[in-house]
Image (cartoon, rainbow, N blue to C red):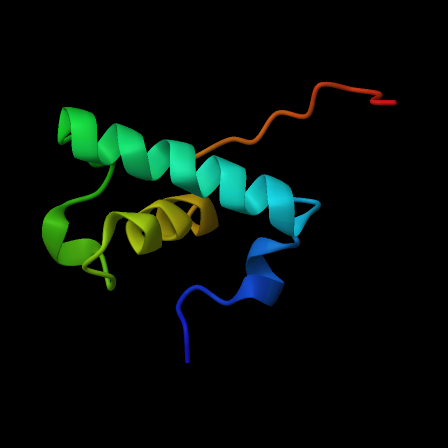
Length: 70
């Protein structure tokens, strides 16, 4: 089973597309800056994309919607 679950993450982010976008941006930031918001031992995932999803699940990443879209 994947951690964190997609169902739980979709309660935080309103679409799968936005979830992928946010996680990929955060993953690239981790690779470029080597900056993690939790201690290395606290992550369950080894890859940065999984770690980005964990940070989102823990509330360390805030997703801001830009209001109405056409």
